[in-house]
Structures are given as C-alpha cells and as structure tokens.
Image 1: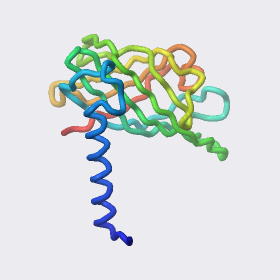
Image 2: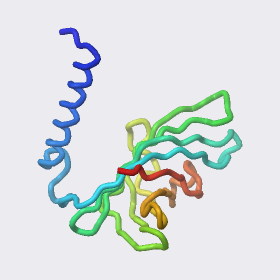
Image 3: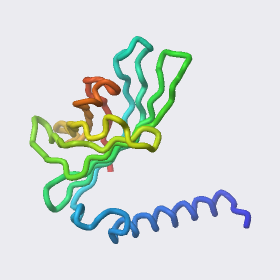
Length: 172
C-alpha cells in the first residue's frame, strides 16, 4: 500500500496514540513503579561541554520531559545527541537519561530533582549508568518555569563533565 504525506502523518498519530495507551495501561512500565501523573513539562537541550579530554568540546542537543506523580516524586527522561563541536572526527553518539522517582526540593526560583539515573549509550547500558544527577527547573516572574539544568555526578562526570547542561522549558 502506498501512502502519501497525509497518510504517513496519520500512521504516526496512530502509533503515538497506541504507545500512549499502552504506557497508560501499564503494559510497558511496571505498575508498582508508577503512579498517576499530575503535571508534565518538557523542552529541549542545546549546549556545549568544556574540552574534557583535549579533543574539543561536545555539542549536546536533545529533548527532555518531567512528570510529577501523585506521590510527589518526579520522573525525568532526556534524549541527548552528542557530537564533537570543533573536531573533524565528530564521534557522534546518543544517550538516554532516565530518572524514575526523583526527589524534589524547592530552590530559589524553582525545583531541584535528584536521584540515580539509568543512562544508555547508543542503546546499550552505559558504564556510568546509576550515576547521581541533579536537575534544576527554574524560572522567574514572567515565566515560572523557563530553564532546565542537568548536572551529572559520579562516574558520568568523566563523560559529560561537571558543568550543568543547560536547556529550555517549552511554553504550553
């Protein structure tokens, strides 16, 4: 069967809807690990690391989302693409960072979410998975939640650095 652009968009919508239904019904994630979502924010990252190893800084680009659960804990997911910014050998690769049940602490202008993150590298569990992360979601008087900062600790510092990776909160 041949699909035009509209048919392709329709199939994408059906797939996304099916994934949302499966996730909502708990068929993908263990039901005991999740509770009902009460709020969700999302946005993007676009930042650079310092030169961590003499081969130049990394450019990090990706999307993230944070979901507040009725338990008061927060689940955060981030999908990051990394590529050398100033090196002809680009070394492109991906990471997925998942923090389930992060603890929330109020900070000036927003919230800090902390916990140990599951981290992948090109789809496989990264050697530094389980490293602590701190995620600050902050804003100001005009936009209550405007900025996100993701800081890695533990073994992940050797790969991502100890400086926060900065991003933006998407307005609804």
